[in-house]
Amino acid sequence: MTSDIPTIVPTRPQQPSQLDEILEAVDDCVERTASALLSTRAATEVEVSHAINTLRASQSEGIHIDLLQALAKVQGHTEEHMGTAIPRIAEKIAFTLNPVPQLIPFAGKLIAPSAFYESFDRVHLIAKALMVPVIFVEDTDAIGVGSANPIAAAILADKIRDIVSRRFDIRPFMTVVRLDYETWTFLANKHFEL
Image 1 (cartoon, rainbow, N blue to C red):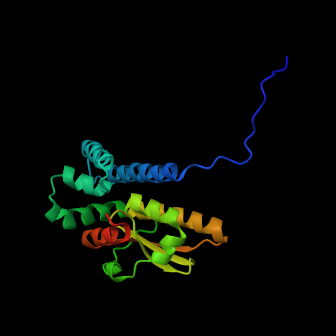
Image 2: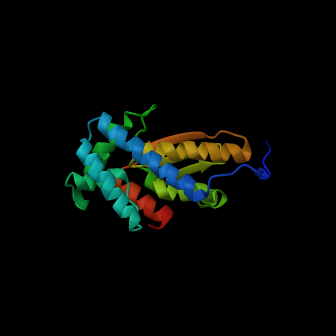
Image 3: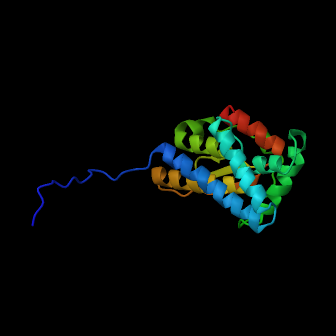
């Protein structure tokens, strides 16, 4: 028995939309960060659950925050104490990564890579969603990213490596660092106009 319904074969593979890719990166970041928070005992399951709810509520209002910020709020830290609370949490979860991203206090003095962002607008959109500034670019051969959340920075580094590799057929050397809270918020505002 044959069917009279024609088969439609796509002429090109379906690519996920930019929005899908951004949402996937953010969801991956939330999932991996939550897992690291629990495995390092930086937070309880209840705190992580409340932090995720806080994060989602902020996102629905168009406010960019990271899960570490949401967790610090859930744990009772006010804005004036974020500068000590977030680095303490970040240091714990940094040990779930290999190599462990180091804290770089001078990253705020580096020049924003505007030309890189213009050339790779997709990277800029993902970086903004993850709140991970690109802190240096050396001819797409060596690129550095940093965040208060080292897991977010590692996720962006993987995305950049993939995107640059597809365009230029080179795999850049990626540096992932941790930023202190003040430097991170300064760079996020400067790079992403938050």
